[in-house]
Image 1: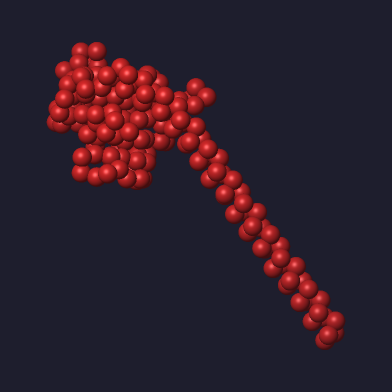
Image 2 (image 1 turned 90 degrees about the vertical axis):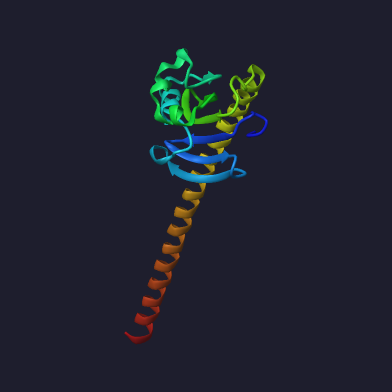
Length: 170
């Protein structure tokens, strides 16, 4: 997805945590970084997309008058971010993640077709994230049930041992 989108930086953010990132120096990695601590993306853009549920597509983020709020973003200005796409991942009318894609080398490098493909992919990301959430909930319930069953078995064994002791010595 990173190379197909002409990006030199990408990130996926869920619940104010960066869960995956990719840039020119790595081949993509799963991570778990608090959004406020993340230094490889415009947090201003991400927060804007989270709150408005609207996509940002700009060919030159540090000069685009449609997104004046980006021109006061220190990350955008210091890194001279040119092309940027910031897409909400929406499931059941709620932003469950944000896809952040940028290119600091080329202006207007994200074509409408690419943005459409990214948009379609975010729908699949939303479904996958929701499935992963349900899977984790199911695993936690299974762990708790197993723990409860183990405790019951230990308790039953303890009572059986007590009864055997009483029968034998009392």
